[in-house]
Image (tube, rainbow, N blue to C red):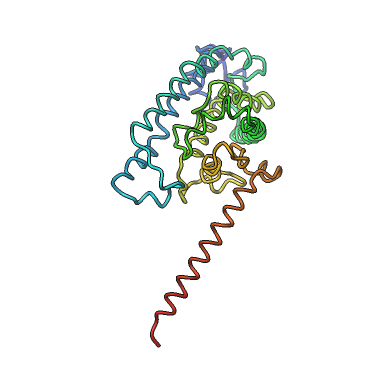
Length: 299
């Protein structure tokens, strides 16, 4: 909670006028407790996972009448019906209500312990970006090893097989998993803010962006106009789709966001071999077509 009664009092304490964003933040948060602000994450999760995958749903359902989007579908032979997609959505929402939501409600003391602040001044854009980069890197590295554990025989049979029910993932399936796996994977999500604690707004952005990234990674589509293709070492949908395609036997592409861990520890060899093989087949096919077309011409 902001310890100032008015904007003027806050300005005097900071020794300057509040920026527009700081004024808006003051108007919204001054009378609200930090616990109330922290619990916004529950609302964000419901909103993000309800609406962000919707364009992918419309694209998937349109494939029943047109094959135009098949060129971007990573596993074009797989088609999901509305009932399949809605069942996944209901299961994910049930997980949020019974597991994730209650965890958020009781985990506030950890936020107090690492001292995530909610007052003024607001963090600069550079501070927010720097902290988000740290959060993504820490989460990615930690998640990599937990994911590898879940692909051990015991971890897969007991827990991780639930997430791999979708061999061709869809956006709503990003958090579709055993409840124990959901709880354990909360550790990498929290570890970055624990190492580099920042403002509540940065924490909100981190939770939102990480979930949006997970939805894209599980989208099942590789769109050439996706802006994340310009992020260095970013995996994306095609990279993670291979992991789901191989399924329980997969010992490849464990990383959640980037590709460097898999490269360093040699757990992307199957993926790279397949990419190389497909490229060779594609080049061979082009060469054959040129020879056939060239041979059919009259002099």
